[in-house]
Image (spheres, helix red, strand yellow):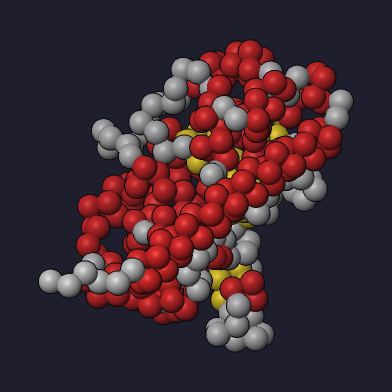
Length: 317
């Protein structure tokens, strides 16, 4: 179960987040800022595939280390290397065949050129199409690379050219209006796994945690966005990123809306945010333990069923 689903179903984790939010204060400032947002691209729709493609592309462009490393490692090596090179990464002293954590961002990287942008969006879109499959941890990365190579042979990269064209339109808005602003917040990391994968944050720029929202129009009520951001903040149990503000990136409106933590959380919560983070981590761990136990029981039941069938004599025909 992801943090998004956990919030949706209102379990213990969602209740913890809701108890300590300060929605009214954030809503007032949000209403003022969102009233000034105007969609600046020419697309009249928005869907999850478009959003994920743009989110991945922005993350790879800004991140100072190869993001979504587990997913990248499930791609055929030539495709993965093309993606990270297009995002401004070069092999470290250990060479191109070393782990992705050894690849380094080009100094003073200012973003991909036109050719690199094409590769970045094309492979980001491929990741988007297969993200549910490629995230699966019950396959070795070598096995996953073989699976993805098979997909490439039946559905080549240009299979989703329409999606890439639309993503490129949104990308151009980001490049013209948002990239420099986000870069000024500080060094970025993208695709950050929190609480052993219970949540994956889109971006941290400097000390600001951000979620990319590729929506046609921002909602009037910011509560759901705020719940998600607060949840990601609380899952950074050790305060690794020293977050002091959270916000949303709206590429289609060329806007970034942020809130300081003292706007997001109640006064009571602000007195012990470290304690809240520990409590959130404990709940997340319990949820993950329960899911793992359910999966073990499912596998055991399947194995026992197969054994029972194998032991049953086949009826004569």
